[in-house]
Figure 1: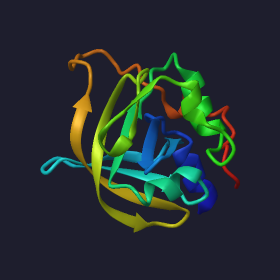
Figure 2: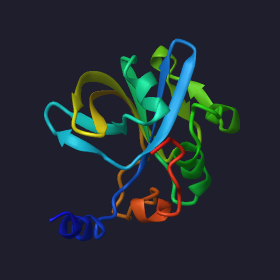
Figure 3: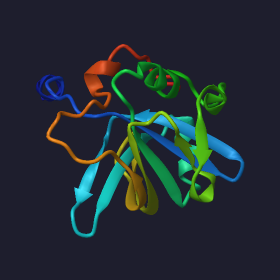
Figure 4: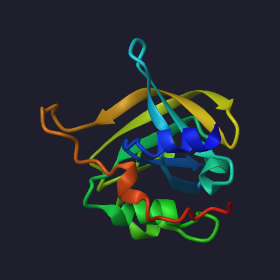
Length: 164
């Protein structure tokens, strides 16, 4: 069954996100492949962060997270946030960002972003889901053009920076 499911999943290509968090002076951020809108009214979005990821520990102590869409041309941001571990690297020293509510880093080079109030957590195996209520958003005007956001297939070459 697992190989059939793996074959199904290999057909998917969806946006990846950089999620950032701040707990006091401690900043964290990671590349997230498991995320999506999960309610229209009220608006809700869920992100799943690996328990092995440094960002998980910081995010679990936060009341607000930032979710960023990364432009396809900025593979370097995905490499930084997906291929480096916050246990050993200061990712924010290498990027332009500003502090949002509660000090949450907002990446200057994101295509779009939103800040979400953490409403709930759910442990679903090797990842924990964070249910977010959007409180602030920056996005370009809607168009009929396809998204230029970085997608799963664009980052398949990145080895996870956190321990397996």
